[in-house]
Length: 326
Image 1 (cartoon, rainbow, N blue to C red):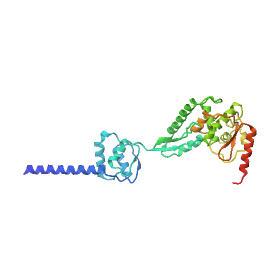
Image 2: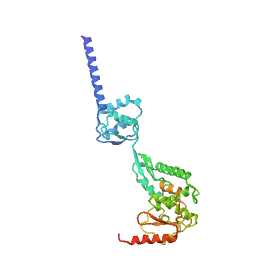
Image 3: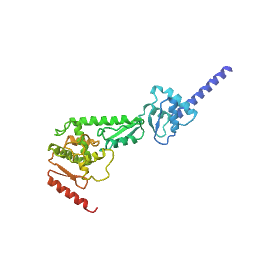
Image 4: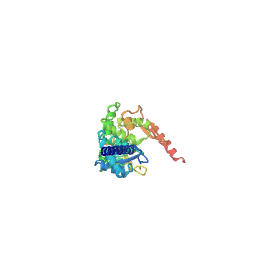
């Protein structure tokens, strides 16, 4: 009788263990409480801090059974890899099983920052300084040395490191474009191409016009003519620190500055903005033309001309258009 009692007790324990295992598996694989895809910052510090972050974000229930089950699951599945500390995206209704997969194999959430073409170093610094989820001070980048494009970064990336990447991308892009350039007179090194591209960038937003604008500037350089481009005057006045909220005056054109191409001969000593790939490519592959002048056409583009008389005619047309009632 005693033996039968022992067997009965063992059987009861076996049934209890089986039931407990089934319950654990059910809770391990059942849908979780997250109502939608959610980004959660998982800190360093082991499974305890990981669990706390998940429970705080309502990805897992906050009770003793969940804590016990999570610890057991982490231990039994440790061969699948370590838990990562990062900002991770967990799917809606993720089970504990899915959560552990994300903790081990999920890629960090990437945030994006777009640097538009034509910004000055000060404007780029302000964008990076106000971008979310970055850390550390924001150094002022070198003028024109940031490649305008969209950048991806992880939470807590150093601002200085992101700016270094932006400048490295420009250096690499500029090197490639320079090596594949046409044989263009007046450009002696990659930096001169960068300076020219920055002028093109500020003169026209129309990609189709940029090779022709490049040719006008190169033609003027080769003839020893001053470039006389208004954006260089604005840069001479503002140093790229702000925008000029008024029209240029005749006195502005006489501003004594190496950047003012009405005042000095040749290219400015440095770029006046960060040019995009389109403007860099235009500087490296200018159009074929004898044009020496261009002026706005009043419709978002420009009229190009090879003679001063033709240019003056185009200026007259623009002024008449500007005087017409809107």
